[in-house]
Length: 260
Image (cartoon, rainbow, N blue to C red; front, side, top):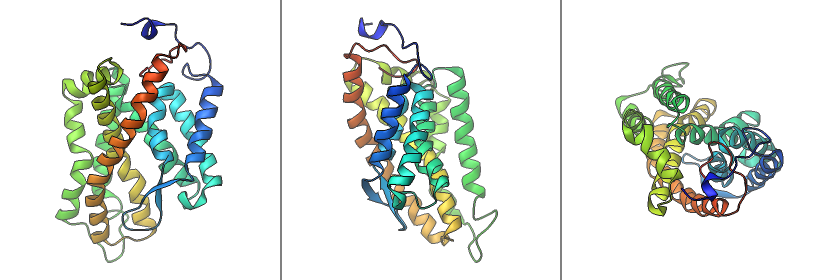
């Protein structure tokens, strides 16, 4: 292990990340909410660029700092870019915070608490996908069918299986923190992909219910995001790894559970 990787950990702030670092990163997240990168499948708005940097936050600031920065960024984003946050405070949680929550869990599965929370989150996501909103509380005239349920499986079943293997329990966190660039890119990509896939239901389903999506439209939306989230995960990894490598060489004190 290099000297940079063994330097003293950051002693101040939240979760080891300085308050200033968290605040600056949160402000950047909020400003990036102004930049659309892809329209929602089914219409109604755009995915903002802040989603990418929110997902990266726990890699840079650790899980606590990354989630706090996401909260700051979500609140700022709601005010500076209301078109990207049409549901107001609910979208602060859905669009502004949840990507960081999921990547914070999945990049720390080498720790028992991170592993247990990841499994629990994936199971809850799968159960919620089955129930809400077409089984309960229901949308008038719309009934879930086998095709809809089949399109939900990719968002949680493969990742739940991986969590019960050494790949999810040990190898992915090691790849993310390792010195092999190819494996680091692959590890970061997998964490972000799992995060986006699991986050998708919680982000999409409230819109299905509030705007009474027909089941056919929700099914088409599921199919659309099966390829869009992998593309966004690739973009996110391409952005994240050079930043992480720069931080490794910066001489800054390490932040606990960050991947640099």
